[in-house]
Length: 184
Image 1 (tube, rainbow, N blue to C red):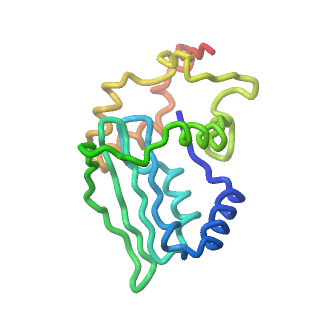
Image 2: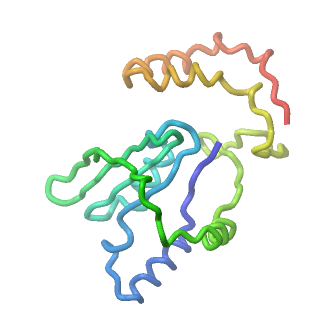
């Protein structure tokens, strides 16, 4: 599981530095590119809330998501005229080398700015118990659905997928809580 949260002070500092360098916000603060660890490039609820909060007052902004397997989603939202949004067809071209790549600088920036946090659900409640330790090395197979079932769910039409998820939400009799075990 992964999530994103912008550090508001860091964003403000970045904007200040860019303005001090003579740039306008539309030159550096309109495009949000990020990856998803799974194979779905659809924006999550957190993505939608973040895009609205951080980029919602911009005249225009783009959210681009790349997921495993090269799946992508890109959406342009504009807040001028009648306002609206449109999906943008995109393709990532890996055929050319990217000369300015400096993996050491990227790794240093990653270590300085990306931090593990608590996994929280709706209303800020912990997904795991308050004292649970979680590591990506942990085997989560006992508390997740089989991958092929999830792929089938993702392949469904949105209305069909919503109907299934709504049914699961109101049918706790389908959950056999006695059999669920979490090993950490």
